[in-house]
Length: 211
Image (cartoon, rainbow, N blue to C red; front, side, top):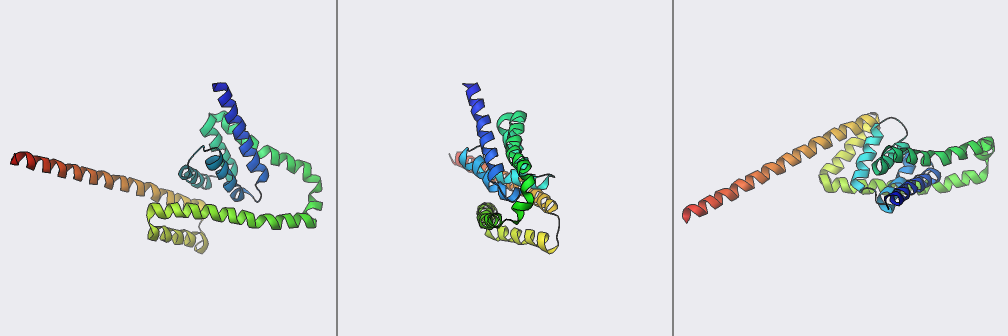
């Protein structure tokens, strides 16, 4: 039973990552919604929150983001061997297709039907990225509040577009704030719980004294 289950997971990883590598067009950012669908919706390997955290960390690390996400998902499910299977399944089909089509690159790049395909796919990718950004933004607003969420969006936009700070630096800054925010909230909640416990103990002491 365990062997069959392990084989199924390897097959699922291979099929999911192969689809994202073949269907994804336009580089890493366009592949992320496809990987999210496979990992969160299709196979339920992780929750949306975990996917968002790993996406932020992958953005801060060097290298192609899609292969980093594939490696993490494979490692999460089946360790090092799962990571190898996921990465190979993600890059091999498209890599082989590139090698096979290399001799036709010049012709395909100028062909009218290829330009039409590119023009048709671009709006779909834009919509998928927009939906994913909206869902992440909605969760951020729920966690931080609407005013803080909008403020952070404006701050990130200003740092990236206004000052032109490298995205990795901006991500690290927000990750640092996120860690500080979580620790602060946890400390405040713990303090509140202790205060409530003291109040309950005081009330119980007063009640016993009256008895």
